[in-house]
Image 1: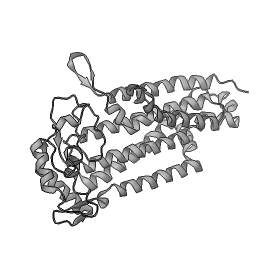
Image 2 (image 1 turned 180 degrees about the horizontal axis):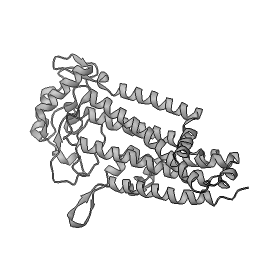
Image 3 (image 1 turned 90 degrees about the vertical axis):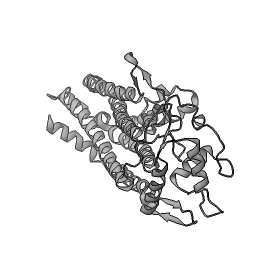
Length: 361
């Protein structure tokens, strides 16, 4: 069985288009990590000069440490007053992480505190716990890089896994496989196992690399701060208390889970379609078209079960927590994870059966 899995894995991997797609992922990943890494950071000093690179990161962290903790109106007023640019300077909007976070939400036109209640700018927030301010730049760069890169990796998975079953139909080798001793059982399982190993290898390697790069550049400072408090204007609609580290953990679950869901979708299409080309077209449509459903009133609970929305991660995180017996509340992220396990089990059962019952011509 092991040699069959190895053989199927090599069939998936050893294609020019797969090499090209992996090369694209490497180039895009390197560009995003460099563009959002420590070397790209820039902050404004009180004297009007700028710090760049790691000096900027350390300066940002020092400022965040002064105001770390529960965010209050007094803190907002002090931050805006202390770090507001005193005159017109080039790229004045790049002040520092903490200032940029509060000025966009509570600052008036002249960058003074407008007196707005802290939680009133987050109408979706339903938690009784106050929001915690802290350094967020590294965490948000990690999350946003992961969102975009997982969308790209999704296209790689579609291209790589679409031919797993359908290529046998195209080449006519299904007749040879299905009439062999292990063709209807072990061969189908080998194809499925090899596909999931390919998915876990690609996704796992990338997430390990990305995690290491951002940990090296930014460390874990700000891990306990609220993810809603950032100057990227993302995750503001998360309705419960969620830290930067908690959001990163949830996103890792979503990215891996939705990779498994996408693998299941592609394998089911591959075993149903009669050609590799038809499988690729159908799989790309099933993967990409739902990206437009957000403007069509589709409930976020359904959107979140689609891989591309799970990769983007904001939709499932914006769903209020589910209440279970005993007053326990869980994030909808775990529903997506459970769906991934169900889809994986379904593929092992139904894809094998469909392939085994395929009419050999």
